[in-house]
Every structure is written in C-alpha cells, then in structure tokens.
Image (cartoon, rainbow, N blue to C red; front, side, top):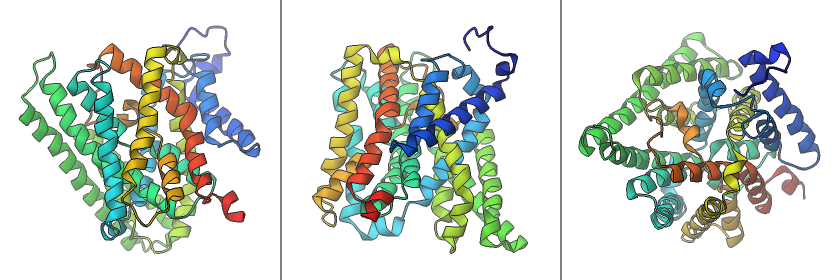
Amino acid sequence: MNDVSSLPLFLFSPLAIIGASLLLSQMLGVLLQRRGVPRLYGAVAAGLILGMSGFGLVDAPLLTYFQELMNAAAALVLFEAGRKMDLTWLWRSRAQGGSLVLGCVLRGACTVALLVPFGLAWGEAAFIASILIAINPVVFTSMVSDHNATGVATYAAANAVGLSHLVALVALSVSLSWLRSHGITDEPPFVDQLVLQGGKLLLGAAIALLCYGVYKLAARLSRAEASARPGILLATLMLDLGLCSVTSSSALLSLLLMGLLLRNAEKRENVFQAQLKTVQDIGYALLFMASAALVELEQVLQWQILLMALLLFSMRIAATRLALVPGYAWSAHKKHAIALSACSLVSFSTLVVDSSIPNAAYLSGTATSLMGALLALNVLVAPALTWAGLHFAGETHEGSER
C-alpha cells in the first residue's frame, strides 16, 4: 500500500480497510440506485477512490492478504453461474444452444485475429483470447438480481455465462500448456503440460461430484428443510474450494459443476435462493470493488492501447450478435439484447480463485497493458451496457411494470 502515515491508526488494519471499502461501496450503491444508476457502480466508485487510481489504500498486496475471502465470494458467484445453466434446454433447443457455443468460438477466434496483427505472439494471443471467451458472472448476475430481470433474453444470457466459462476453461488449458511449454524457462513439453492441465480439470470435476454427494448426505441425515439448506450448501462450497486449493485442481470447473448439479436438487427454489441472495450481493460488491481498485486509469490514457481495447470490447459484442443469427426462436430485438447483456468480460485477476492456473507474469508488457485497459473498460462500461441489454429486452422489473 502507499504511504498513508497521515491517516488514522485504525486504517492500518487490513480488515478495517476492506470493511470501510465495502461499506462505502454499499452506501454509494444505494444512493446511485435511487437515481436510476446500477448499484454495482457503487463498488466501482469505492474501488476507484480507495484503489490504485485513488488513495492507494486497496492494492494488490492487500487483496492478496484477503485472497481466501475473495475466493469464498468467487465461489458463490461461480456456483450461481453453474446453477443457471440448463443442459436439457441447451441440448433440446439445438439452434439456440448451438448459437451460444458458436458465440464462444467466435469471441476467441476474433480476439486472436485482432491481437496477432497488433504485435502479440500466437501463443500469447491465444491465451488472452481464452480468457476473453468468458462472460463476467459478477456483472451479469448482479444486474439481473438488482433489477429482477426474467425472460427469454435473460434466460439465454444466463446460460451463455456458464457455458462460456466451461469453453474458456478448456481453451485456457490448451493455450496455457502451449505458453508454458514454449516459454523461456525449462518447462515440460506441450503434451505433458496438456495432460497436467487436463488432470486438474478432471480432479476438479471429481471433487464437485464428491462435495455434491456430501451435501445430499448431510441434508438427508439432518432432514433439513429447504430454508435450512443454504447453510449446509455454503459449508459444502467452502469444502469444495478448500479441496481444490490443496490439490491444485480446477476450482472454477468444480464450483460451476456444483451449481449445475444443484440445479435440480432443490424443488423449493424460491426459499432456497432468498436465503443466499444477501450473501451473494455482498460477494458481488466485494469482487467488483476489488477489480475497480486494481484499475490504473493511466493505462487508459495510452491511446494505442485504448483503441485496441475498445476494438476488442466492441468485437466481442459483434461476435456474440453474429453467432445468434441461427437462433430462430429469438427475434432480432431479443438477439440485440442478449449480445449487449453478455458484453462483460473477465480478466486474469478474476480467475485467481483457481489455484490450478499459475500467475501471468510471463505475459509481455504490451499484453499486460492491454489487459489492464480492458479491465478498466469492463469496470466503467460493462455494468451500464449489461443493464441496457436487459432493459432493451423489456425484461427488467421496470420493463415488466410497463
């Protein structure tokens, strides 16, 4: 953290800083929401004020100190993303489900096609493209929760969020294996790296199956009612996250699968979801405040990097919209709305919950600056565009009332 010797003594407590940041984000969020601004911008404002672009109280070392807390918040977000995936619908809808998969492929392919002429190596471009396949679950789920969005476009975009993470994890395993095997350090060959990364995915899936069984057994032995099961679920998610951490397996995949497995386990979903909503809302604010705190606005002022980031951001929306063309069940209006509401992206820092993914210190300076600019754009623009997409579809609470 920066030199803050003139500040009150209590602010030197890392926990106090996190608490004050979260408090500020909640207060600003409520005030902004009353004026029609998405509540998530309260976390953005708090992060920018107290983070790297502001007073410097919340920075990377401080957030690393609370990594387990961030991981716990991410566990809830990833679980919710998995719980919204409907594999039966994705399979039976055929054209609609296929268009969502095609969107993942196009976002990755177009990113590589733009980054290689920009001067990045093929392996580095593929690695970044793998990350940019995924749609940010914090932004989308927070917007849906705040505005009670329901409908065709919301349902499709919710499926796209979980599906994009599954595709991104597979692509990331391949690109990461290639990068590490062709790096400057003495790493095992590509095939060995690929087997290693694949093993971590399989182990993460096995842990999800184990923890799902533990959850079902605990609920059955205790004869817990639906209203009491969220506590058992939270404990099981922490168990899942901990097992993934000590085994260096894929926590991202494991937590997504936990949500997917739980989708049909709870018949009284309204009671179940109501118990978790408050905790999830706090998790959204904490994670997005942390993302905003890491934004360095100086990177946005580099016009070449900014133009490339804007091009990539716009390309992802266009690629998603193009992929929706085969989805004959959606009107053109709904397709526009889905593409907008799925505009948000994840950064490497979002994937830090997964201990199976090493740090990205081997990325070039250009790639690091570009990811920083994309993070800034995502924090500043994505919540508004996601809300606009849901509103454009007429599926927010306000749209329903009309």
